[in-house]
Amino acid sequence: VSKMVKTTQPTPTEAGSAFTAAIEIRDAGDNLVTSTALQVFVTVSLAESFGLGSTVLFATSGSSLTVQTGSGAASWAGLLVSKAPVVYAFAFKATTSAGVSLTTVSHRVAVPIGDIAELVLLAQPPSTLSGAKLPPIAVQLRDKGGNPLAATNGELIQVLVSKGGGSLLFSPASTEVAASLTNGIATFDNLTLAIESGAAL
Image 1 (cartoon, rainbow, N blue to C red):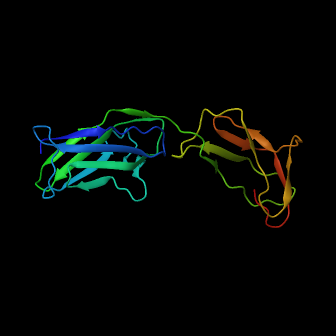
Image 2: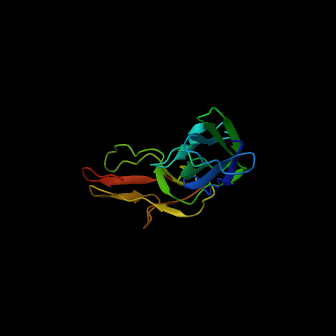
Image 3: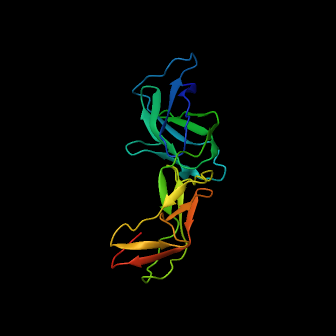
């Protein structure tokens, strides 16, 4: 065992989307080391955390950050990073059953904020008497990694009564109870809810 070679560089395209990586363990002649008697454990981690900590790197269900191999090759099909925009680099550390340790680091890759994946209430609407004005309600657009879509502006978000009956009144009067997105956040601050028992937004 002489070196570890990256055969597939990890290249995440957006936060929350799975990406792959692969390495090979080779000898001094650049030959793949294949021996069932020589077990190798390879772990992938962040090479540079930039203060984010290790919790931004995950393996999807059924996968693991550590792979055991006796074939000289190890691969990952379900790696995820959660934070963006961030420049990532990934470290691979191999430890053999013979006590040899090898390390290699990937190239750096910039991961942008992804596409719209969810709409999140920043605060739950409180219980309110019928006819009373509601406190401001804010919702935020986020990508798969939970990162705010700060560049989304101008589009409209509509709020509806989801259950229990009742109606929403919007001041000034409008046929559409909607708010415009600013930096990925829509705030409804002029709502009155005329409710029936059990109504919810």
